[in-house]
Amino acid sequence: MRTVGIIGGGASGLAAAITAASEKTVRVFVLEHQEKAGRKLLSTGNGRCNLTNENMSPSFFRSREPEAVKTVLKCFGYEETIRFFHGLGLMTKSKNGYVYPRSAQASAVLHTLRQEAERLGVQIHTGVHVAEIRQKRGKFLIYAGGKAYDADRVLLSAGGKASPVLGSDGSGYTLAKQLGHTLVPVMPALVQLKVHSCPLAKAAGMRIDAGVRILVNGKSAAGDRGELLLTSYGISGIPVFQVSRFASGALREGKRVQAELDLLSDLSEADFFQYLICQKRNRGELPASAYLSGVFPDKLVPCLLSLSGISARRKVKEISEDKLRYLACQCKHLMLQIEADNGFDNAQVCAGGVSLKEIDCRTMQSRLVKGVYLTGELLDADGICGGYNLQWAWATGCLAGRAAAQAEEIRKVRK
Ligand SMILES: Cc1cc2nc3c(=O)[nH]c(=O)nc-3n(C[C@H](O)[C@H](O)[C@H](O)COP(=O)(O)OP(=O)(O)OC[C@H]3O[C@@H](n4cnc5c(N)ncnc54)[C@H](O)[C@@H]3O)c2cc1C
Image (cartoon, rainbow, N blue to C red):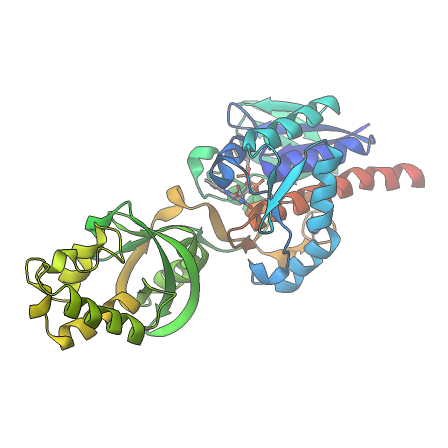
């Protein structure tokens, strides 16, 4: 029996191992350098694991090769992911299209994958760091922890370099380059943004429904809306994650990046101005500090007043209409200077990676080295928040696992 060696026991590696082993034509082993396989999965979806999305489309992914992404999703889309997990006995539930395990526990996904891998006889070696892959007479030697592991097929499923504490430390890129692959520049995506002298820093910890627009050299590049989280260094939360890759990319090209916040996305500027005028008329004796307390979280009010040049102690009736107009404008179009993203350590995903030009996306086999398959975040494709990155991991893992195992079958039949 031939052997499939999988480097990395994360989402795509475990999906690949199960798919390959269930073909029953190959022996499968996984080399994982963390003490346990799949550790990152436990942190996904805030511990609930948003494993895919009912609303699946290539337009939710970014890559230099969008056609290749289309091919992957055509071969293994949302339905295939659901079939895969239901086939393993994991029940799922959907919340507005976002799919989670029915138990709402990420651990259920990991246990299901580990149990199935074990049932199928997949050998998972943990605490084993792969440093090199060599080709020898049509086979591969995988060097890890002073040992060489033989394999007929190799799957590179080592992830990117986002959140390295969870295992993906970027060593997959080194291994891919050893095999001759080239990389589209890698940068953090789905990450918080740091703001130069953040005027909202004192409101750190506050969450507010807001619109976020990224401007690159003054031009709109991306926008989203949702629950914004204010931090001591800048901005976070899902709408920030969704637009962050545009900021990361532009910052790396030395461009000027700003974030425009709309802190009242359900209200027009004119309506809000009228509200302020009305409040001035009816509650004029109050100090300005009490002025916006019916609209924004308490900690945010002094930040907005200070941005608009209004003293918190001033009586509301003493604030000029011009100042109120400016305050309304600040709340609708608050401009923040973005100085950096929050780095790979804090990113959920990497953009960039091994070029999909070098991969046959029906099987995930390398076009450069026969018998090598690449999966997951290591590749140049990243999805927005909402289960798209795990969908990519399951899809590429299952396609690669099946192809690696079936390649053996074809050879056997031909003999
Ligand atoms: C906090 C957080 C929350 C997230 N939440 C979601 C979510 O809810 N939904 C979603 O779709 N996506 C989410 N993601 C993204 C998603 O988890 C990843 O895109 C996905 O896990 C990538 O799968 P992968 O198999 O490519 O890599 P990984 O899951 O990172 O697995 C790679 C594995 O390879 C191992 N490895 C690396 N190098 C070596 C080596 N040299 N030798 C041996 N082993 C090695 C690593 O230890 C790791 O176990 C989240 C990410 C983070 C960090």
